[in-house]
Figure (cartoon, rainbow over the protein chains, first blue to last red):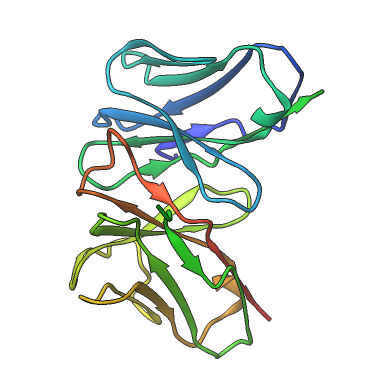
Length: 110
Length: 116
């Protein structure tokens, strides 16, 4: 079993839709969770970072963490074509080593 | 303020040749990480270095792979006697400290290695 799992997609939505990207983890020692966005042929860039159960909002993006269920999600409101990318869920117990999921590909159609 | 610079962007090597991948971290960052990404797979940790020190190389194959981060110059990931299975995108990331949390890593655009 992979430590961080994501549905690979692809997920295709119309512009303006609300998108929920989901991630589960199996290592209960993970304390910190991150969402990275990766455009084609580019390196990942950090979108959101959270460590406590509940919601964390940043503009159109909300990261939701449920430690009891070992579940993380990223909510994108009013999705835009520029949001078309692969979204990587990542977790760490602390320190430097980060474990990444395989990513979910998202396509937002204009 | 340049980000993490990786070169070359694309590298083609024949089986048995050596591949050298270079990474210059962001200004002010002294911690470098190398990750490998295969198609349809996530980023896999390879090695974590600070200047002149390898801190953790637990994700790096024991043979043919080596990494360094000298006092001067970029970090180098070296793959000797490449095989087709080494074909992948190799990403370098840097951070100001040894923490993956908070600001996370800053990634370069990667080097895509193709072994023919």
